Length: 278
Image (cartoon, rainbow, N blue to C red; front, side, top):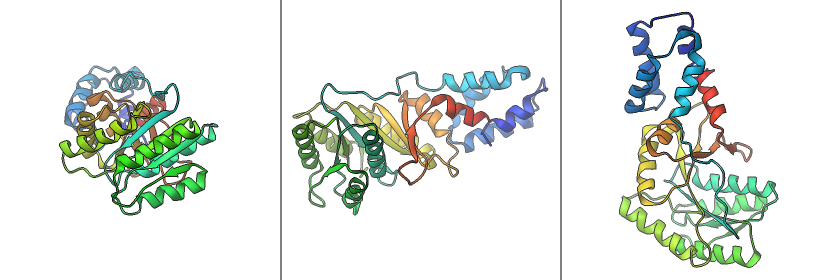
């Protein structure tokens, strides 16, 4: 059942909501990870809605809080380079592989850089995915320099004239200055070969407002062009998508709903809104 479906059902045919009804909606919104600021704003807008057009009005309200920026890929003139960033545990490395799989199915040639050299098993994880989907993986030593791996991958992509280079990055989040320095180094060495066209930030939907805080930190440290929202399934309320887009105006471009290769797709704002309503 959608987040607002019970609200709409109760709203229809009623001219005035009781205070207890508004309190119930407020609690539902907060539990869905919208956050207090967006919850307050939504309630103020919802109080103006008439009962005979509740669903349409709520759809417009929700849509007005989503980013208007393009959700399409930002393509390069030669090889398109995508950096994928995010803290450990968000599904970052898996998202790199799933994105590569989609591009490969679309007939594109792809190189993946196993740049998360500090996390035990991350390199092997990407290599396993590479073998499964038929995509080349460039890797280095465990605990090696992520920027060096990224540079070698860029040279490989240049050598074989690959359509896409997708770079996995280290997910250690000590503080903003460490993050800035590490990501800037990767960006700097790769841009000796190709410009970075896109930076995708992976956020775990189940972390709620903590995910929003992560998004704020990364957005301050690097020019994030899009979000990959993972684990947005039965265990996630999904309201954090609204919160991120309203707060940071960064478009969600991809969603991950499970562990398999097929559980990854473009984010469709209209389908998302309809899911909240129905």
